[in-house]
Amino acid sequence: MNDITIYHPWDMAGVDGLVAARALFGESVDYLAPFQSMETVLGGEACSVLRLCDRNFRITYPGPLDQILSELKLQLWVKQLEWMRAVVLPVDCLPAIAAQATTKAPHRLQPLPLHCAAPAQINPIPALLWHHPIDNWPTLEVHLAYRQIAEFWDRIQSPTYSSVSLTTAHT
Image 1 (cartoon, rainbow, N blue to C red):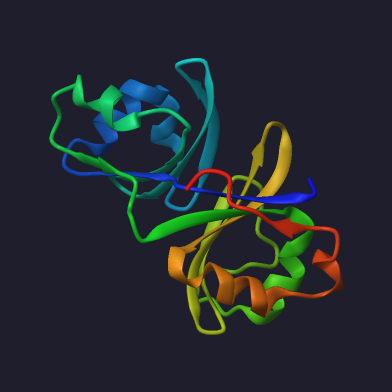
Image 2: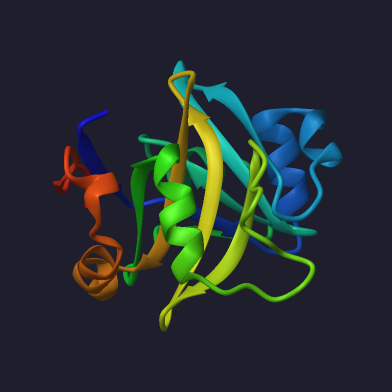
């Protein structure tokens, strides 16, 4: 992974959020605690599902998730938030980012196990760091405000990132 991918994740929430997640991803979403995730396939495409709380999920999916869910006629909303993006980094960047970040208990970044996420402040940028595999490759996704990506990138520059370039893939 020599390039950084920036993409636009989906958020799904509402009274029927868990019902929708079960319909799309199966009963295994019931076993996810908040800030835990799983990898699956939806419509032939790789999909990552992060449980944010009881009925709220963040989903990495390249297709029109809102159209798929509209057919279910449930009480929920599903959106790609205009202000937010995800930056995908090699997982070996985590120690350098964690050195500049603060979290509130019970969350911590060292260690941040696979299939887990944690909210953090990266001097002073609020972000969600999510450690999970993409195409069987462990990665670190940093979810943050789109307008703060350049500032975030400037703050984390170090020799760790010298072989990595920031490019926009899916915005």
